Length: 168
Image (cartoon, one colour):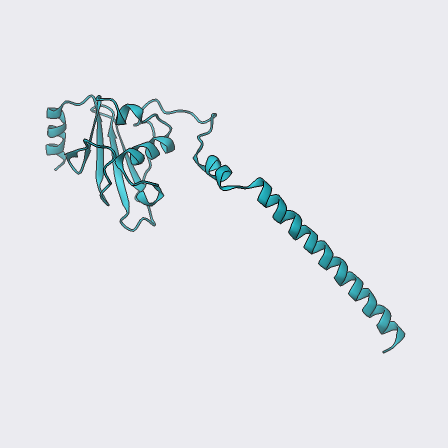
């Protein structure tokens, strides 16, 4: 091997060693940084916390989740809020995102996304909720797939029956 080739080979080996050390250091530094900065708790807080700057909804009919979930494959429910005789909000919701698939969690998650409080719907008697035309007496019951959950604000039972008769 000529002297020129030996010098060139030595330079290539030095550059390769420097690159390997630099890449290894960057890899270890980024891995250490990721382990310190990111955790499951921080991820959940980032995803689940509602921004303080986000405008809050005055009622459940102000916003809605439109369209059927594309990847739900039948694992979804429709949640319809009737705030008065003229205003309603139709929400389609993929049930796979719920930790516990019950009516309380469904209403709470729709409320979290749309930015309104759900406590009065779940606890107060001013809201009457039905799942596929049957009154929801226990919000901890499991949700049926492709069910239609309807919640009425300040409607009498007669008005609800009339509305169901008109829509069927």
